[in-house]
Length: 132
Image (cartoon, rainbow, N blue to C red; front, side):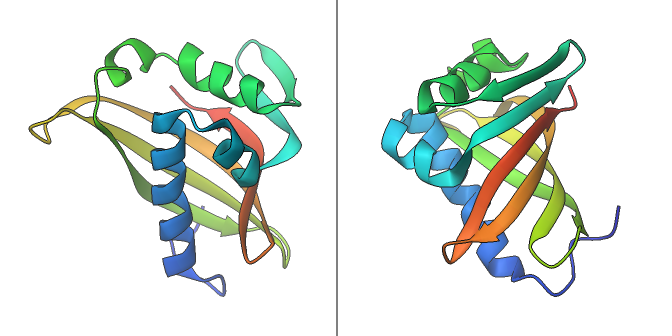
């Protein structure tokens, strides 16, 4: 994968990821819907699952390996690890999520890849592939 540079708007991507961390942490179903291009696809070691509703997306986040520790977090901070442009409208990105407590200490982390589509003036998640 390429370094996080390219013809896409890097600031918009960073803002999208920061906002995603906020809405998922708050379990805001309406806001989650706005960030995913539903139906979306989860691809992991066990198989593939179609995510058709906001509840499916939140279920995905609740079942991830870092979930028990992440629930204690007050912040979910994204670190953009890599970006690959896949055509003019798609980005394949890798993100490291850092879950922080009230003292800003990291209590859990996880890595995930996303296929994003540029649309509606922002990005939309089409595919989620957890790495941890």
